[in-house]
Image 1: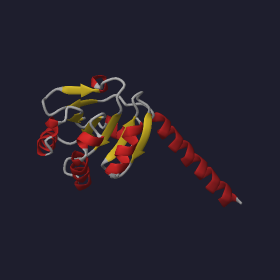
Image 2: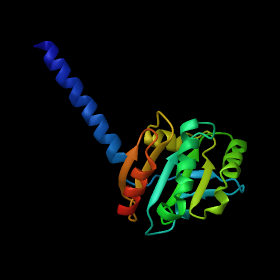
Image 3: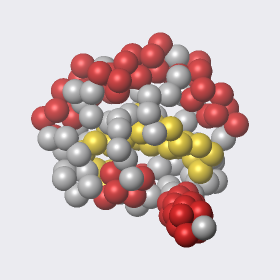
Image 4: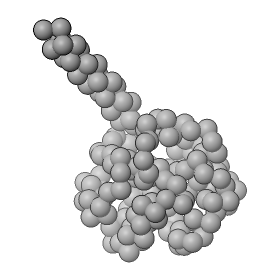
Length: 162
């Protein structure tokens, strides 16, 4: 009986913690990132009434790179009407290389930057693996998160709802 009570207590505690984490990320977080052009960007730079996709990534992560290759193939048809913010804690030099290698300057709706070791966004989402994706609707409310590499078709479907 004590074991059952202990197990139920554990389940309730985990459930409460998960509910608090989900409630916490319902809104677009405040961030400050250093972009490849040496300027700082914050959530205040986001356009109003437009969906937002925040991707926490690492420039040398194979899954993150594959996600970018797949998204680039469908950027104009599926992702042109969403603001994509790629955030990492990697060194600035790596961010510049990622931005250059993927030709992201061709996409005005894509912002890339490093939080320079502050780990604010990493901690906000509780990122354990990259890429981590959070999609918000045009009102800044959370639609869905992915804690591992999502399928691009799933991202496109959710963005269309936003």
